[in-house]
Image 1 (spheres, rainbow, N blue to C red):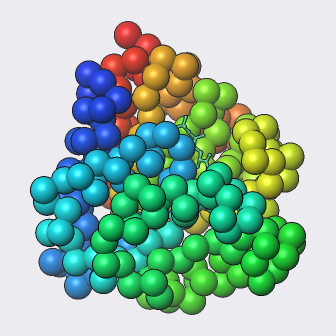
Image 2 (image 1 turned 45 degrees about the vertical axis):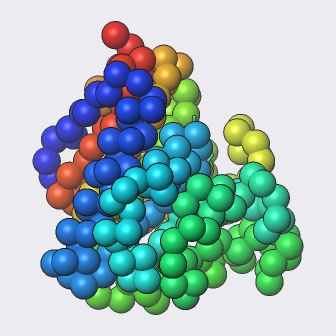
Length: 244
Ligand SMILES: O=C(O)[C@H](O)[C@@H](O)[C@H](O)[C@H](O)COP(=O)(O)O
């Protein structure tokens, strides 16, 4: 596994624009070489800003949006219409403006969906979808995007939480320190199934977590240290998140 690569941009806006350009190119490259592309979206301000930048990009429609498999690394387990939903924020930022194939947009069930308030059942269903769709050898995802929190969480895996030790495909997260409290998250084994992992964050508040993760912290204590791409792991940061 190659060493993590760090790319630093002067501002959060440049980070979002650059990551958006990188994402468009990565999807086009995957579709050219493999006939399809599979990406994992993240919630959080940086993750959504990247999607908005993709939508605003003149190159947006270089992507064949019909042939993109779209997943979420984590989702807030709230009603489908709740603006806290990562999928709703992704639709507002990008997915509502491009011709995605609904059958290829893999949304995590909501708390008012077919499993009611059973987050574990929703997580299990999502795990089944992941294993059913990704039934070939090799990476499940071309690009897996993640944010991270000031205390080092990524997706909805928080330090020293049960999710940090879960060896399944997905898990239900309860009493999450970051509201909303109940979520569904991919686990470390699933976050390890990407060709490329992009850790994307901005702001001085994240500098300590970034430094610890890049410094080889244990993933159970600093979950952002865990996810690594099979071919490449990129840290896409603004200057403030480097702490310098
Ligand atoms: O659903 C979520 O909340 C996200 O997946 C979460 O992991 C997020 O990416 C980080 O908390 C960073 O969020 P910010 O970029 O807003 O700080």
